Image (cartoon, rainbow, N blue to C red; front, side):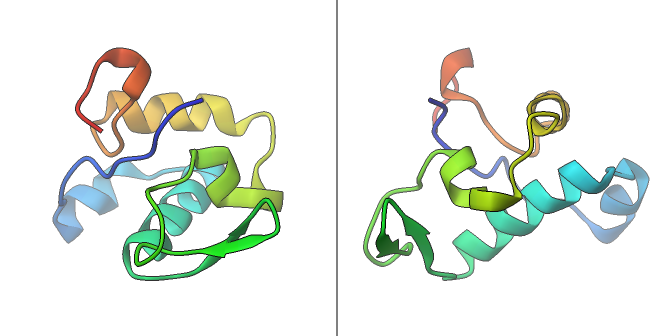
Length: 91
């Protein structure tokens, strides 16, 4: 399981140049929602930044996660938008 961590801030210009496809947009939506206080259901329990550490990305995305999201997640890691515990990054 990978722990979720936001990789930093980007400007509007940088974000426009990223041109993520739908899976990347969905992942970034859930990451942004989490860090802006959105509560999510994980294992029939409602959690948020106020009550829990970051859930694994697949749990955060819930039913929106599709198998092809793995590649989109890797691209986001490579671009520095999210960090990966499996790569030894401080998450």
